[in-house]
Length: 139
Length: 116
Image (cartoon, rainbow over all chains, first blue to last red; front, side, top):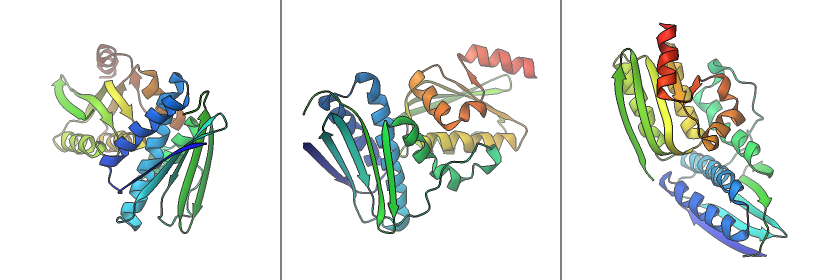
């Protein structure tokens, strides 16, 4: 198992860097080209959500990403340290209910629509979002 | 790539040209532009996304916010987009039912003209 770890300060400007790193490693790991856009978007969503959570709760703490080549899967875990126990499943769309707070959970819906396999684990000590895609070669 | 924004008005339609990446870092600039346009009385907006390389849920939120603002003035906010990678995020979130999405600026202008 090969692992790359990345930590970054909770700044929106760093999310793009995290997306680029994740996409580069996904490509090296053997994720199909047709899936790389999904990796880029899903990792970006998870990091954006983490940045927003940290800015609200603990702006000085770093966000951590682990990227792993694990038994034919490319697995990404984005971990934040902001307390969260209120991630709810998305509701049917109605423009009137699309408040800013509702939109903030849109990212989870997007990740669930993109990643092949997703686990969202919220806790009072932070949220882990683990997602994976099939990969064909080792790093 | 950073975000480039431009806009022009043709008849009653304000066309917003967007190029680059719309994410948590750049989306506030698009939000500011849409708010500014609405505050200046532009209530029929067409956002051309043909040169957008990346769009995330933050960008979607900005577009939904813009739509809510123009609708408060009986206006419209529609999109030009044919890129599958961008359309996919609208489909995943169900927002294809909320936005009018056209294949070209001309097509959107023609549809808008019919609605006058």
